[in-house]
Length: 260
Image (cartoon, rainbow, N blue to C red; front, side, top):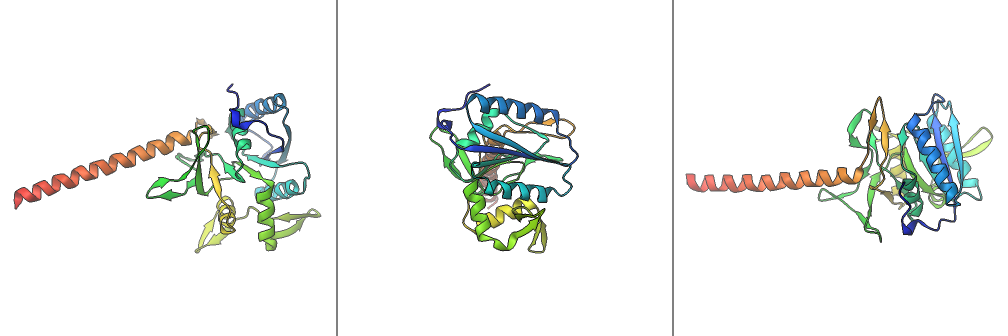
């Protein structure tokens, strides 16, 4: 098991790990990763707790209740939401805790569309933009992130609550904010993950993806994730297509000149 890099330590906050279970079941790789992460956090002396919502037919409601509870928890500082059909490395959690940015997510393969990843990177001229970190790795800025592997700092959720008081409601005698809910925009249905992303960006928030996390997503088999390699491969393919386009244009120009 790799050790966390130098910029991870020390972490003095308290982490909440949260998962919803629709049918009271988790994939075996999820359980293995959770146990490994718990051992890792204990060895490093990091405060943490595990919350779960089992049998939650209304997943959005379960998430909103947990996030609202987290905001009101005086000790907790970071909230990591993980889907029950994923596998990750303990050091991936440590990387997320090391980032000062308010919201940082991991990217994993899309369910039943396994060739694609769930993140929506911010692009300039077809190239993802972001920032280089002191250790030489990077973060990619995003227009949208999925809620399956994402770390929130409390300040982000508090800012969201303050900006959208109309999203507050009462459920089970508790005050809850609808952080995640499906909406309609431009006459199209928008998922709860990307509705949150849009609302967060509308109040000046930034979203980040750490492409160096290795998150596997499970269907009938494992679909390993490597977002960094995916982005590099896509960029190489784009460069190759541009190069071939230039060659084609040169060839056509020569043919036209010869014909003239």
